Length: 222
Length: 417
Image (cartoon, each protein chain N blue to C red):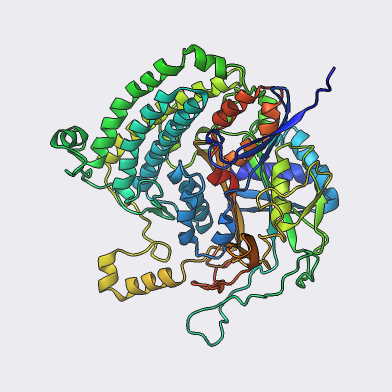
């Protein structure tokens, strides 16, 4: 398998060369990293080239690298870990100050499959802007990207330029925020209950305490 | 002349044929569908975000709850991704057990699919027939894992325990008379493997029964033939996998093309359709049940002859045996570390796909070297199938929507995650 991958890698090197940012083979899988300006062109090539022939998009997802490599071991005085400190402020307009992060925070990862040549590849592109992350949409190249891009927009707030119908997909109607971002608390922002006096459903800030039962520890090497 | 306008119809989310919580907004021209806009996410539980907050092993149970009619296959996808990154492989016997249970799960899934699909289209009897056989297979689930549905049986490094020597028997209660008990326990005298083998001998006849009810049934054919046709090119473009892709004539099965577990050692065939309509997909799934039965039989034969360990011996990853833990310091430490911290994956990312009963089920894990996933993405086949809804229903009648939902084998646990 790895020989096949190396062949594919050298073919991509020869034909795309400068357009590729990085190529890595790990766990017997080939990852291509491209800059966002070359994203569409590389995707088109991967689909149309004979040797590549990636005729199906298996998966597309967003990744938020905000807390990559950070552990939770500093827990303060409590003997029972309360590893997460929750920020109770809540931005209704969704424009609030994003946490500071050096480098590119959001990535869009695409998994491609070639039924013709029986091979897979991973295509990764980082969004240039951390405040309003945006990459080109590949819906035109693989139609199945449509809903996956909607999902990545919904969960991470990544904008896809040229997407025909970029609406929320998984969260509730009227949901505010992007829940899979690392600065979005696991317990959420709002809780909902039926109010007997007002005779309707009311939304309130969550009242439960966030807690971590097993802290996050980084021990694994490369 | 009165003006004729399109109107919008709301379908679901609590419609019995919506297979759970699908809400469809249909734009209709008379009874013909112009546009379908599925609203999914009513069952969104944030499985992937929850997994980020838990050690790897604690998320196996969440995988059962994704596609809650093919539980062990979901586990298999997740566990294989973990094993790939840990660089370990399950012992041979565990791999055979996994293969066998993957196929038992495939039959379980297809039985529910055919029952629900036929019920939607108007054939009540199928539902009752399918659930009769599901009962036996869920008893097998219960015998090995203790749970009829959410098994959490697969673990990184193997399976939780070996197949038990005794098949549990029904006991007398106020609901069952002696005669009932005798009938229910008829096939359960021996081991679990005996019971499974007995099932594999009975099952082909059951599939024949289904076929006599449906395959040449006039109403069944009127409702299915030429409904929801997908060309092979479009099927690939739309991300369709599994029976949805094979129904269109594309010979693609991960079990054959990128084999995992023991599939490269076993004999089975991949059925493909020709027209890519709902009827072809029905035929493909029926044949898949027969092939699964074949695989189960081969696995039973192998498992009978070859006893051995079912769990990897590296106790940095798999828990030590209870007796060892009580008696040995080393094992105690291993157990303590596993229970309080779990194990860490090396830094990196991997995507592992398996042939799930519904299509390609993939797990993409990004690890930063911690004891919890940094990001876990589940590629659920149903999500891609659902997104093709608009294209498949366009130009069909309202009643065909139900057929198309049925033929896609939608389960919302995995679509919404």
